[in-house]
Length: 140
Image (cartoon, rainbow, N blue to C red):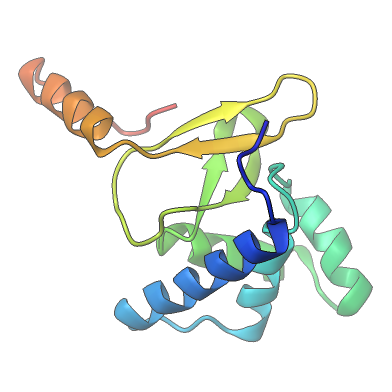
């Protein structure tokens, strides 16, 4: 399903964008945060926090759930990952340099995820929210 032809290149580019986004936001991408982001980019399938913890503990046996949750909170706050509420899982953001609404295509069988970013869709949605006097708390 995914358009990525060279996943290693895709992940490398995503990490470079993440580092750049952190520099622009004056945020610190610590080694643990970076490693968790790398773990998320190992595939295009969303990962649950405890799955990330299990993989992280293979390298850092002392890692605990708060380590992962704090890193995920940081990555979410800085637009480097998305939380897919429907799956209660996380996936790397393909467009950390662009704020706004994005849409996910999720395979029902394998849960592979494709992020679709269309600024026109985001603008239309925000226009409709404003026209109907709604304030969106969360969009799924």
